Length: 194
Image 1 (cartoon, rainbow, N blue to C red):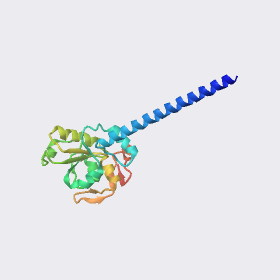
Image 2 (cartoon, helix red, strand yellow):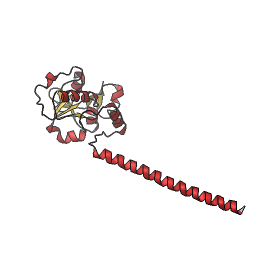
Image 3 (cartoon, one colour):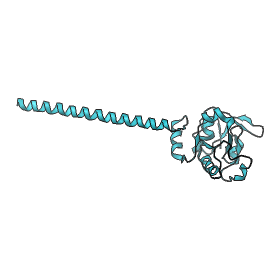
């Protein structure tokens, strides 16, 4: 009986040791994977928005086929870029980012770009970034080289407390066309107009 108890104790000790070793290596593996993921992400030019849910939607909605710019970068260098608004006319009429020129989406025409040099730095935006991504792809195909999609669009511009304007006189406004109630949920600030 004593031998059986000793055998059981040794067996349990060995099993505990194997479990502890296995647990150690699993934790080390997870840590290394996490570290590599963080390094990979920081090595890329990552753009993001302030809301994690919105960011996740954008990461899956957009194809990321063109260079993207975040709101903070644009805000700090806005005078260096020509801004193009890829929303429809009724959205643009409600409000726009200051200095933006309307080019639309549904009826976009290369003729609307005749006054813009192909080497001019351009940022295209829409409500969230989907339509502007498609227009940015078209600009690239037309030979425009220095073009960016505004990640998060005018919604993120307003969500980060930046000004929008309306009318010929570019009067400041709180109103933002929210596209529809589903997409408008990502517009957290400003007065939503549908």
